[in-house]
Length: 598
Image 1 (cartoon, rainbow, N blue to C red):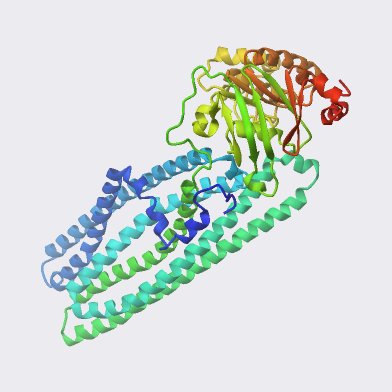
Image 2 (tube, rainbow, N blue to C red; image 1 turned 180 degrees about the vertical axis):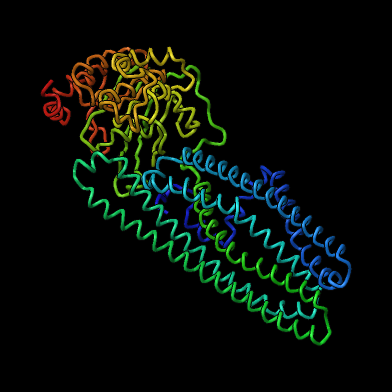
């Protein structure tokens, strides 16, 4: 699977190797079924009732053949009325089974989708460094739909046919042990191909699902960047690539369907060929007087039921095997453990938290880029309420400082502390509640502006949201929107300008009201007028809070009490703006290049 990372404790490859029996992944669904065991039990009772009603029909047919035609018409009518009653029971039980099983499948898959999504939100950023969003969405949609088809239909039909097969087989032995012995001899020749081809179906189904996930991932990525796609007029190229990916998915699905078709053909031929052979032997027994015509009719009906049940089992085996591949892909995600997790006994930060930060000889390498150190023996302290700017060329390690402070990753060596407590000893969620972040790449969701700002603190009131927007200089443009704060702003905030999106993100951070503020180029997307407004808002926001700023704008850097200059993962200079300019080092060169216009 795309998305493997070294920090994941349960490798997908290990899951694949441990797959074992073809249907073993389906056993992982048992806990979900047990949540609704009463509904499942009722469905099982309805299934058995329908099967027993079906198995009662041949007995009525035999009695009618052997005893009915030579007696009064009233007796014949009674046999037919009895059969009508059996059919009514069969219809009612089948309808009840269908309803219960279908709703059970829907409920189980809804729970499974929720669990997979919730687990994805808990996985560490290292997982998403290499995982593809489109593939994860394929697992949440296509794979869960496949599981739903199995749980809500295929497994039920398979169980019904299994009951029919066992019941009909038992009645065949009761009706004629001699003829049944010929059937028993044929069973191994029928079952063995099912097992062998079932494994092939599952393997090829998994390949088809992986290929489809790859195509979905490619499509999701392109649709998310459709403006760039069209701006560079690459529609023809990407259509060709997507068509190729879809064709590869089709080829894999075609191979899976071919394996299932061969499996079904072999099973049906073997099953019904054995029925024809046994029927021929039975006809000889009737001629010889060893059994009655009614007994032969009863045996044939049971043989047909058994053969039909076994034939359906072969088809259901293929479908359930296909669903097993989908279930395996889903539980691969659920078995992954976050690389960043709370310790068994996490320390609790003193309240109220102060926001003091320290890096002590920290080195770090990203799991996805193990050949290059992002930080190399970095040490610094930021006191309570202090404002510190971090500057340096691209790739110097500035954003990595924020990633470690938020404990998205753990240092390779050294330690990071928050209020003198190593962050590795804290619950990551508890740590992050005390941090407000304004990222360089603003994350805006397909919701209203009010909901986007409320993302900073879900329990905030509407008045608090509006006050945060006012402080972020967003109030004016929000009021001009058609529905004000309730205006839907499209996926990724596509209907807003870059500066408007940035101000929404700043309002979100203001609403967070955390003791530690992380600003990653917070004013980079603003025009001069908006920057002046936002800068004054940030001044109010930073007052009394520890603030770390990644910035190139002169106004932001000058507002900080200290500047850390980074290059190639190291802190190479430290001081105030005037001190660093006087040294005529890296900062002075960056100042001349980046702040000249100011």
